[in-house]
Image (cartoon, rainbow, N blue to C red):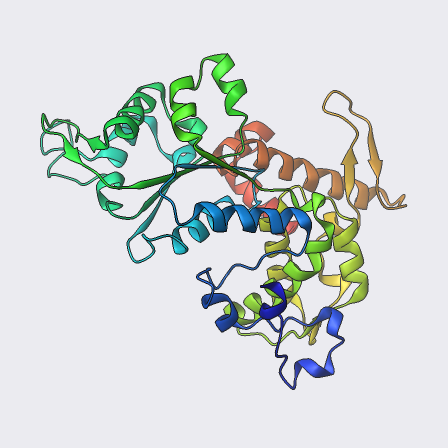
Length: 354
């Protein structure tokens, strides 16, 4: 469906070399029950993911989506929902990594008035809200042990019980979970229950990293170019060849999310009708690769000896790695780096990290 999505260029697009145009049409996407902000890559890995999604979507199987941060786990979950018999019902997302443990039970399962201090009214949980539809639990590995037990009960009995209630409520929800953590390792550490893992793991979809699929970079770049034009009311028609070369040489630690943000920022900064290398973030043009986790030695992927460039590239790369390690939690990232949140935001803005 990529070929359909990039068909029918406009007259304006015809003036641009085919390799760099972004003429993706919305109807080609929506006709196939995928979100208008999604496009599939042409690599064998991307095609395999698409096949798995199409295979499991019509069922009610619980799905585990695995992949590095930024590989599009929520997009894959939405695609499964959009292609399922539940597509006309709600798709509800819960980020377990950002859910404070003290209120996680209430958020997931709801509560009754007076069940705890501050419970001034009855409240539906996300399971009730998603009833009849799909509930997507992102970063499932961060769920507390207590709430893992409650989740197991939901999986086994298909009922929920609000906090402070003695009454069970039947629930009809398809559950999709995602994680960038090794759940088997978490089980060995005692942080994740083995019985829940086997209950959840009815069907597994593993998303490849962007560096594993370099042939997809051009397709995604063109698509994100068009979306950025729409969102920012710009008319940037193409991406220069040297920019695409930079993209293909870069390792993309933030994966598709990082590529989308880089293209969007570049569109905003472009004063002409094409993206030029001068608007790219420093870490794209002069990336630094860390040799190993246990070594302080670094190697430049580009042949540069400019000290300022090296320092900035190293700092940008370190911030990106810290963001990945904390699942893009800004407070935890700032603490990990030993700086305050304001400094972190300033540095992220400087390096074009979103």
